[in-house]
Image (cartoon, rainbow, N blue to C red):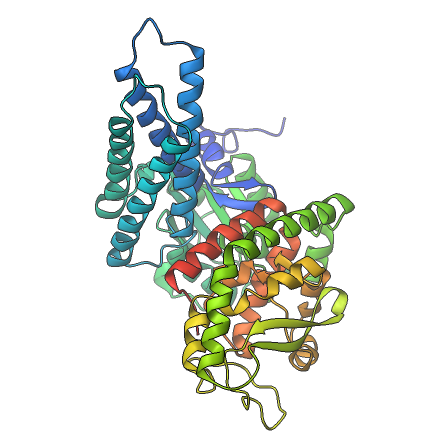
Length: 487
């Protein structure tokens, strides 16, 4: 029998098994932190529960039946979904916590105001029975929402950290291990970096000795003693017996999650790191589903979404066009050749935000921060992403999608394809008006920024789905509202 005293899972190992398994939850190919999912469920439950309590308090027990409960649940779910969309757009469910307390307070106030509008709109469109006082219902719901936001910003998360906190051990002490360790300490407050475990055959040591755990101790014993939930294998060299396969297997059988560096970055940070990914990992792993059903659903979603957005944004586009025309001579729209699906070129159309002589020498240039070529109106429409709105007509035409990698100019594509591995993979899907890289990474216009964005684009191409498109669109709303990354 394989199991003996050392390897039989203890009660703590069983607890770690469920904790490690649920640390990340995969929904339609996209990974969410368990804390995020639980937080969303709690927020929905509080809003729906507050509305139902408000109705029960005012209800006549003799008239309380399934129809009343159903009507209350319908209104509560609609309110909760609207408030979740607002909170998501404002960054309350982000993977990483990069906002200051002041920024979170400002966003909480905005969320409370918008949530109030949503609650009032739902009760106006779906009025309650005359026996209910809609004002009291709205006040109770908003009071619960206010408490929820205040607690989250001033006191902390609604959920205790003991429920979702993970202890992670990095196997390796080289450059890759150091990179994983830095990302762990910055990516989430709910992750505790236990330390690094040195491979016996690893010659490159970038991690200080104080962070290296128990050099002579067995990996199994260290994992049990420290209560490790996950091991990330981050070795620069795996050949020659660098990895203790039997010990890693024992840890996995005890319920400890074991992942390689490429999988770690994909699941935790939503990116595929070029230095850790290989052609074999991309080929034999999951993802890259480009089937007929996915293509058809995405196209129908693009058409419907583009039509709605065009109708809603027509007044904004009219004002932008007038402002551009009044400020300077030249065309209102700017056409430029870009590379799209299957490396075919097409013309992208945007509102002109630069002077007409921006590239008078004929040599393409990266846009830069505080670019002197940008006009005054151009700075405003760029900050609010209004300059991108004409691309919605390109979505209807079929050249672009609502969500996808941003299209680049042929001049830069030729260079980047030669210099950066896997760059051409991003052309296996239609380019988008917005994308996973745009909502996950700051604005950048250099080769280094292109590499960073490509790692997010590869994640999208590998895991794209209608659900991920919706996530990107919600986060794009937050980018527009906050002006994040605008240049």
